[in-house]
Image 1 (cartoon, rainbow, N blue to C red):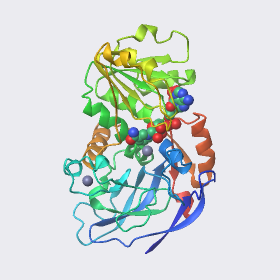
Image 2: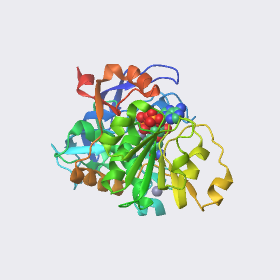
Image 3: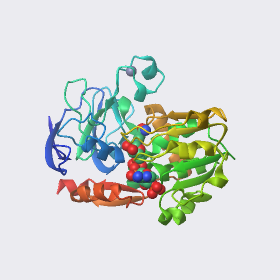
Image 4: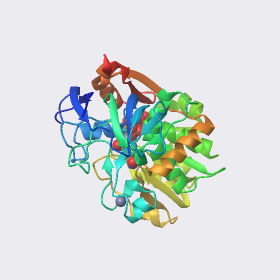
Amino acid sequence: MIATKAFATPAPDADLAPFQIERRNPGPHDVQIEILYCGVCHSDIHQARNEWGNSIYPMVPGHEIVGRVTAIGDHVKNFKVGELAGVGCIVDSCRTCSQCSAGEEQYCENGMTGTYNSIGKDGLPTYGGYSTQVVVDEKYTLHVSEKLDLKGVAPLLCAGITTYSPLRHWKVSKGQQVAIVGLGGLGHMGVKLAAAMGAEVTVLSTSDSKEADSKRLGATHFVNTKKEGSMDALKNRFDFILNTVSAPNSYDQFLPLLKTDGAMVLVGAPPEPSAITGFNLIMQRRTIAGSLIGGIRETQEMLDFCAEHNITSDVEIIPMSQINEAYDRIMKGDVKYRFVIDIASLKD
Ligand code: NAP
Ligand code: ZN
Ligand code: ZN
């Protein structure tokens, strides 16, 4: 076993603190990765605080992992020692169901194994990227371009794929009107990716302070949703709305902004339910749907798309010791636009 330094939370109401874990020795199909950077997703906070009611403790969060391969198993075909590699939200799945066969492992009918807060096939809890190394089957390991700034690549492994996948699934294309609700870690990637796909992007935000950034990130319009009447002129405007908000929000506020046959897709995952008025769907045959991260093949496609279009996340680098403060700042909306942990700070 490989002794590995990590940061874990022991309980929903506790801070994260140093914790020692063990990684398995690489099996024949495994890749061992020295973690260099790990992004901090709002899902880390939901789960560390047991807001979704399914948390396993102690928990080592982190599913936006980039690093360098330090060892490979005998049968590994696609990775070499010394190469960059990435790990997102999925480290295993049944590999045989129809969803796995279709490359949609996130929807595995037998339940995918999450990078953390899951029980692996060995019966042990999985631990995430707030740690110095990870061992993952090459099937669930991604190739990372040397061309991009590695710090800004880490958040692509969750925020990037979670926004890319629905934009592709709902066929967002050149000239379409797209709104991104919430300009956080996911939202700012949604703006960059939708703009790169040729859409005209509007940011629907509760924070006036993000207007200038919205335009810099690639949006054409910015609307503060808290201002009375601010959305009146947007009725029937959008082909597609991506809702990334982490807290309960009024879906009825946004549905009337869709054109006939338009879709609002939820990726933000507040634990509490929100009411929907059927008429907002009925009147223009509108759709409301949800989307979970993306499969391994599509995650690689997204990473390649980002390398081609020179897209990375706007990040604020923190040492591991500042993680609790970072969680507090995310809850206040005070991050532009993703915290990324410099894992070197965990080795000292
Ligand atoms: P984040 O960085 O905290 O961004 C969330 C944004 O939502 C904030 O920046 C803010 O944007 C807006 N917001 C927050 N509280 C709000 C409130 N009370 N009312 C209205 N707007 C509010 O979080 P994130 O990492 O992007 O994650 C967003 C959500 O997606 C989380 O629930 C996370 O768990 C979920 N998620 C889902 C998937 C999936 O597969 N579906 C994957 C990853 C994450 P403005 O300041 O612009 O209003
Ligand atoms: Zn995430
Ligand atoms: Zn499966």
